[in-house]
Picture 1 (cartoon, rainbow, N blue to C red):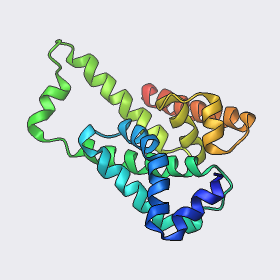
Picture 2 (picture 1 turned 120 degrees about the vertical axis):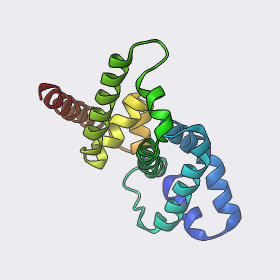
Picture 3 (picture 1 turned 45 degrees about the vertical axis):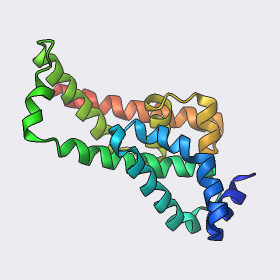
Length: 178
């Protein structure tokens, strides 16, 4: 079944057809959500992604792959959820996060700051660049898988990945120079 047919199934409003689409892509979306949120929130993120997809399927134009469109929705929601989750860390847990039991608090703190800088850099990327670098570098997809998911050619994938990595590197370099 091609991408336009999958979108048509979501647009149909027929419960059985919608369940078929969900069954086909649910494990992929769960894998994406797992990268950004705690296990107890995966179901919520994936459910929100399906709701967003159902509400927004009329805007799917078939330029990229249907799966890539679903992955982008899920990654954006999961990333937002993960940031919100990180900000709501209970105060009584903060010392454990900063000072790990292995006695390397400075190292852990610096790693946390670097991670925050990288997250900020990723947030500053265009959606196309961010999706490409996340699929390749965060989710570990191959170039071939990324090309297929996004519905782009290999050269475009390589250019987007290079640009994204360069922009993230520049952001981190600037932050370290301060």
